Length: 116
Image (tube, rainbow, N blue to C red):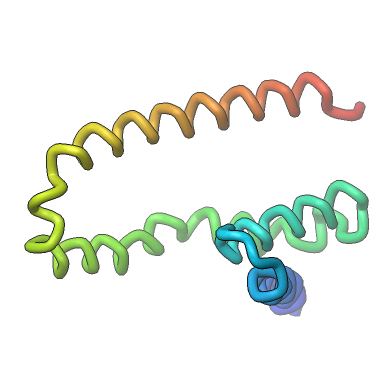
């Protein structure tokens, strides 16, 4: 029952992110709205970490499985992407490194300013 409640909380926040996407006319994905909303709820202690921790850990554990459908979609649209292969081979490693760098810096910042 604990997992159902935790998934329900995460699903509710995700649905609120979808709703915000339609209410706020910005080109921001609904998942980003949901992440920011969940972060805010956790930060301001509206939701405690233990209320979503187990379900969140489960979702992180199965995350690699979530990449299978997009990878299959890339294989299906290979003919359309063939012309963009050179730019993609440059853009993907560069943006991956930038995201890893930014994530590391944010994590360092958060750990240094963590409340005791």
